[in-house]
Length: 73
Image 1 (cartoon, rainbow, N blue to C red):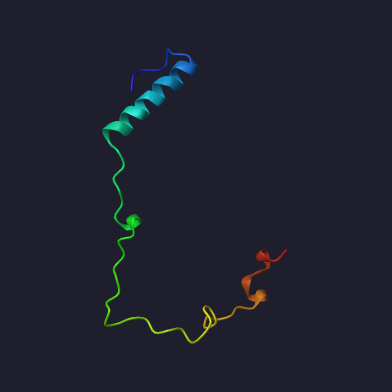
Image 2: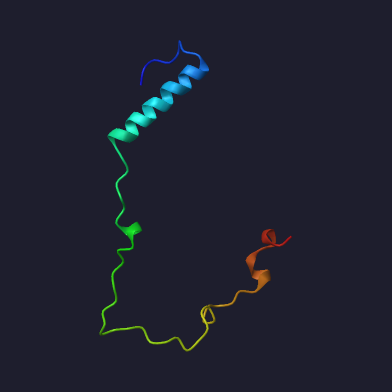
């Protein structure tokens, strides 16, 4: 980027935006593999069996007093 010390604030903004736009054109973001839904598929031989309990019911329960005084209002 050019030396912007002699420019006004508006001109400085314009040059910064232009350099950012130029950098974005030269180095575009690459697509991420994990964001495109390419999860590993489960094999047909080992499907998940249906759940016979409620989700979260096997979690250990914590009493409210054990969480600390700072979290109680």
